Length: 56
Image 1 (cartoon, rainbow, N blue to C red):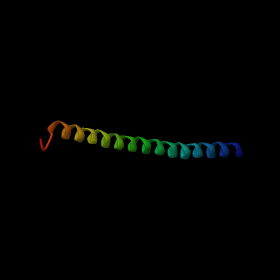
Image 2 (cartoon, one colour):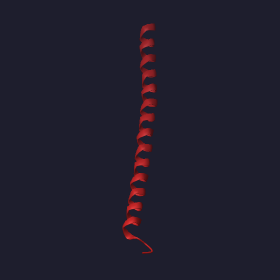
Image 3 (cartoon, rainbow, N blue to C red):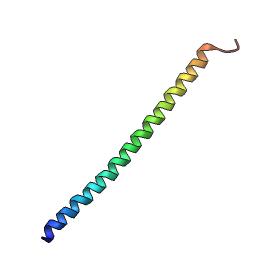
Image 4 (cartoon, helix red, strand yellow):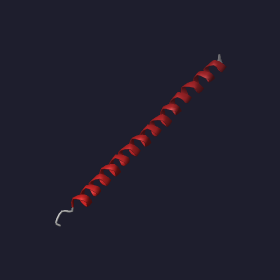
């Protein structure tokens, strides 16, 4: 009986750790996508202002 409880406790702990790790990875992916989107928009704005040449 003690061995079964130990296995169950190990499985529950593994699920908690897996959830934390997956949450961290998803958070990193989310921030990478946000930063990538900001970089793309900034590049588009810079390209737009360079090609239109306001003031000339």
